[in-house]
Length: 439
Image 1: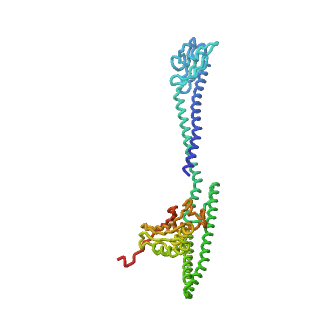
Image 2: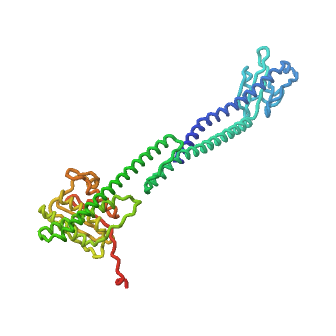
Image 3: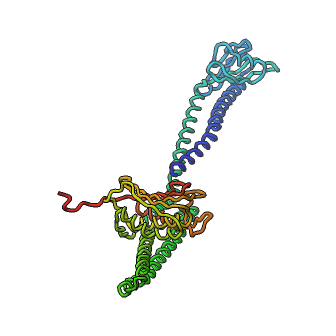
């Protein structure tokens, strides 16, 4: 911005200087030449007044002093020099002056003015005044040099003033940019300082008000998440303890499977609350890494959880791995939550058989969830929070799954629209070898 302000100011000053200096330079040239011609004409007139008609009979003529650096002479009608200095024979300017008119012109390299001398309504001679045109040209060049120096000085002052104004304008914007970068880095307490520019101050105030509103909104969101998770933890823990106690005390074989399933569901719900709380934490708060689990075990647990739900709807759930080594491990709880969202989405919105496949990609594992249905509309909008398309739902599940994937350093995307398929890429960590394997 600083360079742009300087360029604009310099361009404006340059245009102004050109528009003023060029006509002024031409006016100076015209004025100096006109002044010199006037000086010559006055000298010639002064000489013509002193010429006596008797000079024709040989009476001496006393002419005044010629202009500085010039010549002054008297010529008779025969164009002969009779007094003063000048060419021995009169030139064109003298010949024209014999017609009883004052003549201005050039002769060779001189400026010339000729005034006729009259007596009894007859021209009896011509007084010719001349000076070198080079002297006037030198004065013109000197005046132009002074004018050029003034123009350079004006442009220099314009640049200095423009740079100062550029600093005044750019400094608060640069300060606002630094505060914005600080906010991006996580410092929500950064605020833009006021400046001397009213418009920039208005932008800074709006920025600070917006940042304050966002900070309050984030604080309320964080407090709500923490409060909600805290309030859910207590009853979930109590329910879990009650179910565990029921399993220990109740010997009824008919109720035991239901209690075990309810306990497993409670534990999964407790894990879901913990994972959502982990995701909602601010960047500046430490996060505990989720425990790792093997891909095979994760698929077994997922199939055990979802097989019954699909069977009740008369649908099949197939799962398997493609060359996934046993030492490949992924964060268990987050990946389980993401796969749960994708399987629930396939159960509610999809059709036919659902397939869950894990593929080893070396430094990542790809989980593919496909069914025999189709995805309508724009695939990118499926992950927008609140987007439900034409179907039922809250529009939160896929958005939450995407955020969980990003928090793991992975990616969740729509692999195909027909048949419907989603792919989850998760970075893996190789299982560290034990002391006995290190030799």
